[in-house]
Image (cartoon, rainbow, N blue to C red):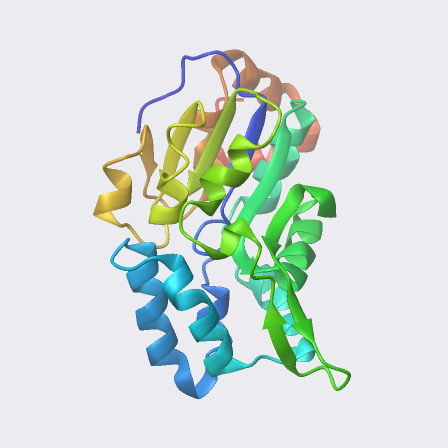
Length: 240
């Protein structure tokens, strides 16, 4: 891990699954089809197949109900990585814009994002639609986040800011040429093809350790002086 000595980032963007939370939400929804769903997810995250070739296939196989997707939001919270909530709060205290960009399901990811302290408008995921009985009907096929290259497309559409993107999959690494820094979070799963494209790789399953690469020396000192960030400082092992 290389400590950051660059100008401060204005915007920090996180992937959700296997980054902020230790689970892959779509795999959790897989039920009796979990092995098949996991294989499709892993192939897409490793870049072996395009995301768009498996996205609809997985949802059609699972056909999750509204209740299952809502429950998934709680499962994300229950499996949040150590330091996730503290890191988001610390970055916000420094005046940074914090967002989630995920190929996960909007209803669940937004619930998780709100628990982390984010506004819903700063959480980007794929909407799915239900019928009058709350059964799965369709997903948002026009969403860029349901296809390969979509995260890059979305980030590029925003106002230009010094941006760091943190993620674990190949769809995250695709943003590397439109952000100031791409950081591979390998605390849940390390994909060599993703790590090879990153400016920094974090292998500890502790998101507070990202403070070293997301914050300058001056910003780390500010966090250390802020009594509200006591837990973050402890988890990040910052000098008091």
